[in-house]
Image (cartoon, rainbow, N blue to C red):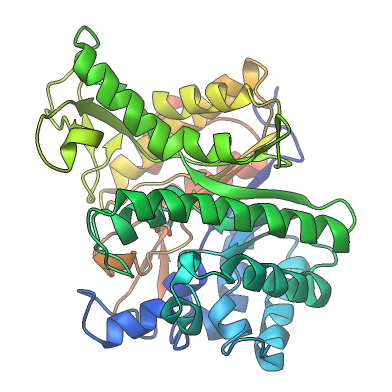
Amino acid sequence: MERDFPEDFLWGAATAAHQVEGFNVASDWWAAEEAGLLPHRSGAACRHLERFEEDFELARRYGHNAHRLSLEWARLEPRPGVFDAEAFAHYARVLAALRARGLEPIVTLQHFTLPRWLAERGGWLASDAIERFARYVAEVARALGSGIRWWLTVNEPTVLAKHGYVTGDWPPFRRGRWDLAMRVIARMIAAHESAYRVLHEILARPLVSFAHSLPWIEPCDPGRWRDRAAAALRRWFLCDSCFWLVRERGRPLLDFVAVNYYTRSIVRWRARGRALLFGVDCLDPHHGDRRRFDELGQEVWPEGLYRTLCRCARLGLPILVTENGIATTDDGLRIEHLSEHLRALARARAEGVDVRGYLYWTLFDNYEWARGFTAHFGLAALDPENGERRPRPAMELFARVARSGRLPRTEEAGEAA
Ligand code: IFM
């Protein structure tokens, strides 16, 4: 029977060091957690630091042929200019464990957390942040880089800027500082560019991008110019600013587009306060078709993945879905979410969009930043008592699609639920 996805399509899950490893003590997040500035502590997280072999085995057993992970800058360079040989040896073992199981590594160099020493100097706004990042990237490329094809320099600059400098619920807890948020985005894109050059200098033909959070954004009432303006402004800030900044002489300094897609935002204009710039979210469950929301209040809207992929295709580069998932303990909803998003993905591919892989967020429930362990994104559930990983039905469905390259039939999706 004909396949919906090619043999070499990448199938896997995405994780990030601070969310799964545990005891990330030299990072800014750990410092903020210990100081009581965050509502939840990561602590031992999922003990992935010790359990990585068993975790990769789980992924392999469930049909994955790729895995996105992040290297923790704070572990690798716990003090400025001092690189930790044991941390490098650890990640060499991690990468070897992936390869031994036929899992293609997709490596993120910085996923939200920063070394504490850099955060104390201003984080991405420190005058030497970009130079420091480039030096760290060069060390990683030389020590660990051979054989790694897929690289993500930084993760979701707009999300970090929004939480750290506008809503102020993440380190460094600044509120309403749109000016700083915009500067952070620009600095992170500059950091991406210097990392891009470093990786291309040191390695043979790496594929380099940054992971971009791309919600689908639309006006609440397309007939009202104010809603349209609020949506356009939000789209520019959250989605397009990064692509605009990363253009060098008209060409984006990217080898592929890394799409993190979760949700749609329906935006309504409001005349006062912070919302003046950004609009407010319309959460009306009766707006348009039946609307479904996850534990974080994010709407499940698979059509948005299709539209986002078509929009990104205009950049003329291959695309990797580097994150897509849902926070829920409802197995039926997770199955629905997964099968509908895979259909959206297959539709985009069938229309010629060059998508090379799909990475589910995430392998097992983990530390969801300021929400701690209260959001359940995992293909497997995490037992809080003993850390056991228990595959959910969606993990079985994922395995079937990954192994066969074929979309689930409607009754198969129903059975899995
Ligand atoms: O957990 C996060 C991840 O770190 C970045 N992208 C969104 C995920 C789910 O909220």
